[in-house]
Length: 636
Image 1 (cartoon, helix red, strand yellow):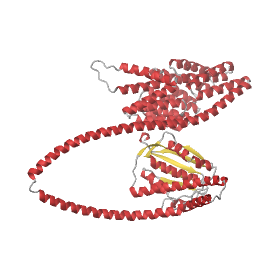
Image 2 (cartoon, rainbow, N blue to C red):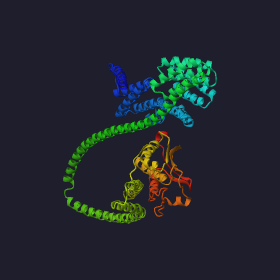
Image 3 (cartoon, rainbow, N blue to C red):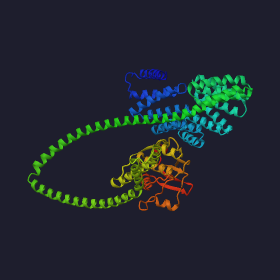
Image 4 (cartoon, rainbow, N blue to C red):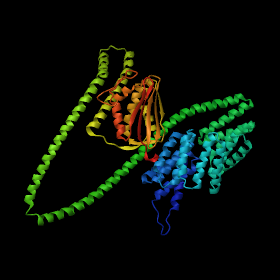
């Protein structure tokens, strides 16, 4: 049914747009695809409050078409619509990812769209109860309004929400009335309806129930005019709560049931919860504890189901984001390859013509002018070439000699590291396999040994990976392929990679990185850094400990921290970590071994990407490994 509705809406709207674009006499039109993209985005924006799933599908179609046409404004608007729909469905971290992608795509001259996007991000942070970030983004939104009354009203509207949630009701009323006054000037009924509901809530909180009901009536009536089912459901819950405050429980109960049913039909979970709470309060106040307990159980069951659903849904949405990103990347790669092919053909044609003409001219000139000097020039050229060849051979031999001396030193260091740190795990593995071959073990012992072998194999694998990465950088040099990276998403990936190691030691992994905030760095390098830091944190943390990944913005940098509450290190031990000559390495809390080269590699990779790495550690209390990376240009 959802697919049918989406297809029907899209066909009707596109047909209407294309019909409007039949050129009149003498008219000149641009690419028709741009009109279609803008129309799809407009349709998605207008319908998301009535049918969020259909609006999401339409926005995805617009995004794919915009990426194909290299229409940055259309792509930004599509990302914005997708993030807006996810916000309306309470998927806040996913909404932040798409809204930040919108900021990356909006051209700098589109001040009002950028303001709108900053405002929506601020609203998402407000719903996450991160009011400091919310106000920071609203300030940015206000800077881009440039006197536009609609945009100024939007910012004031969101400020009123933050003040209300912080209990600053006078400031909330001031900002709400300011926004309402501006909306009346520009005849914006949709935002005015929301503001009436917000003023209703403030009056309810301050005990002015008569005024609250009056504003609720206005918001409810306007919700039909602007087709805002979400607002209608929210207002219904407000009615029920006010009736409860007035002791009119028989009126509160059917109102709450009706609001809950409407919220359920459009998937607004927060409103469903509010309806249940209103029903529980009504029946408890009436003394009908049996019915109150019935709704309490339904509420608890819904919360349990919701937690499981949200966890699975967030994983699904992240996977969908990666799939979309890959699809867009494949489209861009194909288009880039086609452009390169066309450019190559054009260059080949020009080169052939140029070479043909040049060759003809050169032949004529050589034949007429330099015929008698050809033999002497040829001999002189041969002597010069021989001299240049001898000189180049000498330089090559000297360079090769220096490289051989350097590589010899590196080889000796690598052999020493391998001999020192891989001898013991390999010897243990050999002894275990020898004893297994002689049938010394029972099935239970074999099962137990397999579990013991796994960390040794993973440790040796990480050791070899680090050695090869480090050695490769010294032998061949290193290429940097920087792009925007989301630390939160890398944390999700790391939690899956190290899931077995975390579970084995009962260590809790906390991903506190801010979603949507991205660094500008080489993805493979940063993955190597995070894998090594997380592996070390797990290694030196006692069972039932914790490991935390966090990030924060510091001017034009993002500061990333991997923290554990493990063994910790002294100052002397920290000073030995970044030198291959000292080769400092300890065993983990479960006897895990390492080469000590991982942190050296991490430091090189972070510095190569324009950052710094440092350590703060206290013995027996844990360690914090910090590294900074350049902030993606969209946040500067």
